[in-house]
Length: 115
Image (cartoon, rainbow, N blue to C red; front, side, top):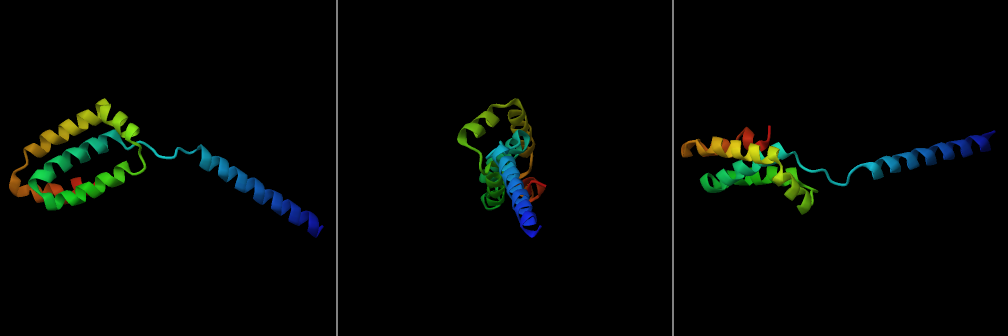
């Protein structure tokens, strides 16, 4: 009886491991970043690089998180999308209206942190 139980336990363990391997293999290796978030973040980075270089580091870190694991081809496709272009354009228009005295608020605030 004990021998049968151990074989059964081993079989269940192997099946569980095999199933988890199938699930992991079926998941995509790297997902494309959200086009809206990427467009907004890149527009803010462009603004901050000129208006508040110190604050641009936060935005750059946020951008790095967004694109982590994505290939150049994937990023190129995302950047060609209408959603990306609209988000980048809208955010670019918005930050262009921000007074330079408030640049640090944009570059270090919630827009930079992605909250």
